[in-house]
Image (cartoon, rainbow, N blue to C red; front, side):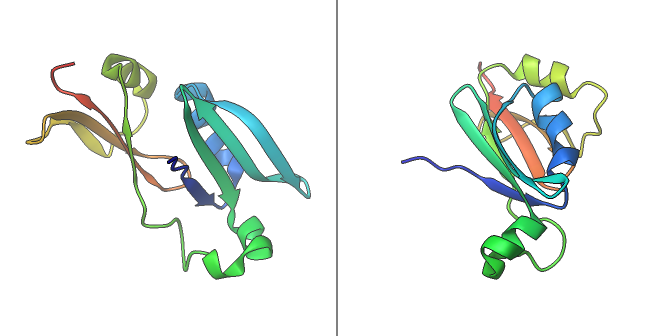
Length: 126
């Protein structure tokens, strides 16, 4: 089984610098829609993430257009190298300061430019 999140955003281009330049993903597919991108697929270390504009969703499957703003789905991304995440997030606004949870995960959380919650986590003993 695979699960690939599709983040519905106002502008794909607004989210690309966060995911590509800061977090190290690579764009493997993009689909133009007029003078902008309507859809993109990003990958890193076997993980896949899709970005799709509200406008593109409206044309493709209008029943899935979010009511207002981004969806209320957050991403919980387990990483092997938490220090790398901290380095990549250096200078980026942090919404959830670094913490260690009762279930043994070291976490830090941000809002990506599309407004979605993203928690990066690693086993505390790692």
